[in-house]
Length: 362
View (cartoon, rainbow, N blue to C red):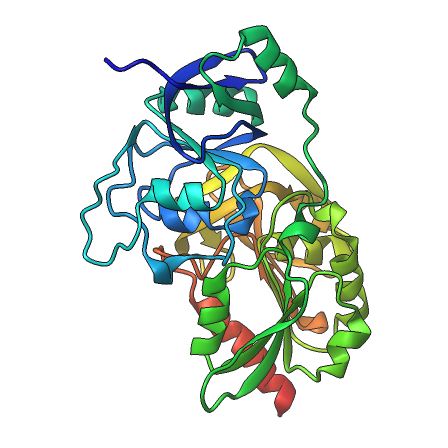
């Protein structure tokens, strides 16, 4: 057996040795796990994983490579990737690069050969925590000191948001949508284009006045990393624009809408990450299988007394998965209806947004 050349050290003192792939660098991040069986390219390129190191519960990663068309952001900002078995010989006619090549290109470290089941159980039982990936020769006490001294940043949205507006247009469009970029996934823009929307993507600190001057038919609030309470500019925009035009929020956007209308959020023990979360639509009684990625959630009890109504709930832990305020022309969901490679159970929510804009135009 070849000697280990990388290791990770958790905040709780656990140590795991393995083999390096991707960027050869040291990094300290928040440790989380993802239960998806496919879609590792979309995971590594999801801006919501900024400053997070992701442990994949599925044991084989890398086997279908990376495809140019499937990135969720132009510049991936994930902290690191932890896998049981890494495959560097992809079998897929669409692949253009290996996973390791892409991680190296964007300076993201990876480690394979570790016990991902044990790591996942630690996170599940003790909660998400900090982790260091470093050279196998780094002294244990020194590594543990580094990880425990690390302070999780609060400026992640400002770092991943675009610095100037950009456009994604579609032929014969019907509606103009302004999308506030807090770390937007590109498939959200693609879905809006498919529904006949021209999309103007703007930085997270764009003001309500600037948005109204663009004369949009609707406003979209994106997903993104970190604590929603740290993104006050967007919360203020919702407060100013509620009732003035249709608003749709996903993930972080859902949390910011809820905060703007008086609800509260909290940090979960280990969050929801994966493409297999059952959610009940409270209006229809149907169960949707959803893709999720978040550390924070809306406190369902705090919705009482606000103008928000609970529309969806998670069947695993009863957390709030969707809210709506018809009088304010807004709604939001915690999960990802645009999820790629899937599931697609919740794609109807984009049609709901279109219907709101259609009604507003009458």
